[in-house]
Length: 81
Image (cartoon, rainbow, N blue to C red; front, side):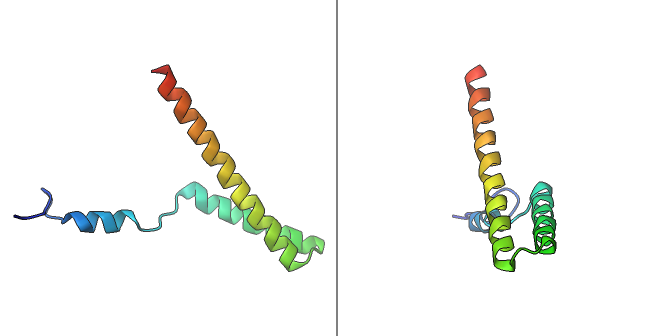
């Protein structure tokens, strides 16, 4: 009994490929924007530790905000059907 799919790829190979870290274009743009913001904070005279902490907080704050917004839109779309 063979566990190959029609394309000749084994099932566990597909699972391993789906677990790879993948960045979308908007994630890279967000990271670049947060880095530029951090450099700006350093230029104003903020301590590097504080600038890094604020930048990390902004990054995760935006990610959480966008994730909740997407989830909300998905729920609203499913109710309309």
